[in-house]
Length: 164
Image (cartoon, rainbow, N blue to C red; front, side, top):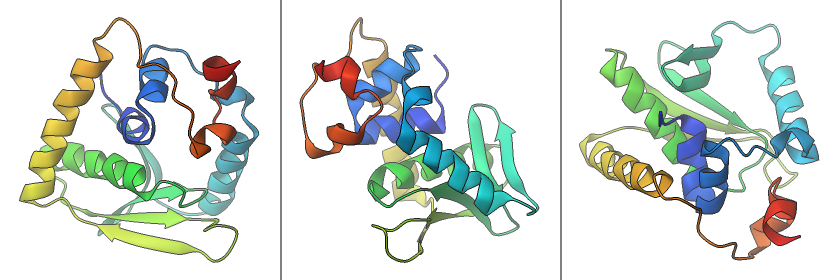
């Protein structure tokens, strides 16, 4: 199975969501939050250069001379977005493109715009390689982990699948 940035993000955010998405069980098309995020992304990218680049399992929101930019609706899960961006940096590095990462959160808890910069160094690259191996092992399982309810589940596109 080919890994993607979204799969890396979901693995950090929710392993069950990751497994379901990777096995083509996608409930996001019916999610109002996902729809809002896509619209905000389109508005933010409108009329700008270097937006949305696709290459071997990655879909980078924006690529500049200095940064790989990942746009997100909110800063609800910075760790998941960080590792998604690290994956993009890793794939680009393999292609000879060295960049730093910049995470841009458009609705920071309904307050102000927020950015976070990340860098793929030797230590984070080793951790990422271990994470990717862990994800591949998990996705090879016959079924996902059982659903365990947490606060983040309440607005998840997979809520009905997991709990109803």
